[in-house]
Amino acid sequence: MSQRFGGRFSPDGNRTSPASVPARPHPVGARVNLLFMLPFAFAIGAFFKDPVGLALNLGAFGVLMLAAWLTREGVVAQAAYEARKVARRPAIPRKMFASVLMGAGLALAGVADGVMAASIFAVAGGALHFGAFGADPLTDKGMDGVDTFQTDRAARAVEEAEMHLAAMQDAIKRSGDRALARRVDSFAGTLRQLFHAVENDPRRLGAARRYLGVYLVGARDATVKFADLYARNRDEQARVDYQALLDDLETRFALRREVLLEDDRTDLEIEIEVLRERLEREGLRAQEPL
Image (cartoon, rainbow, N blue to C red; front, side, top):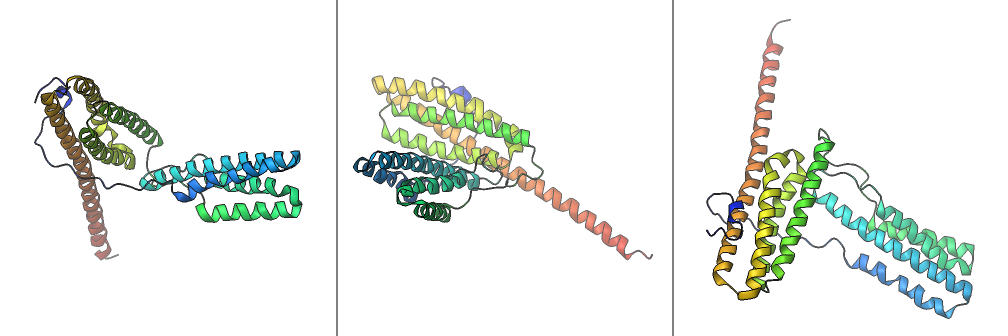
């Protein structure tokens, strides 16, 4: 394979078909989007009220928009939490704060009709919001026996890898080749499987660090060079070389993930064997006369 697009960063190995990654629905759905639309009813109605009503409605608009934003961030954070086997609880319970703000915003809108009406709006709005979106995750997941320092290192490494991957996807768009853009998206899907493996078990970071760093940075730089070259002269040989580079890298990333999973199975088998030996020894002792 030609080295002009950073082929030196591609590990040697046989080529295999990469595993496909099923598309996941975006966590922000119609319910969250609707929360951003409803406050505009108060903003529009504010201009048909007296000065006090104007201030109350505009205040309600601002509070409800903040509640919608917190809800969206909370839904995204929960989706990330649920997608991982090992995860910390969100630092801020955004959805729960949003429920309180939803009640407060509706209370502001109802103050003009009296304290009782405002109280009813506050309780009903907060309760309905909480019923629709639920609570934020309040406990860490799978953190027993996991070094928090390792977890933070793994999170930073994956975050940096995601930045390299995003830069790679942005760069390929400059080439103007939609087929290659889809190919890079598929490549990104395979890489994210490795990312998820590291997130789920931060102890894997050492075995995957080169792939998240050196190889991915090489792929990003190669993509930038290729996109600039191909946008100028549509060099077909360059396109073939770049696709071959993607194939090689994708294969190696997929194989690395399989190796990590195989190591996990080996560790489990060792633990099971050790436990069996202990049980057998205890069983022999139990048969000995007192």
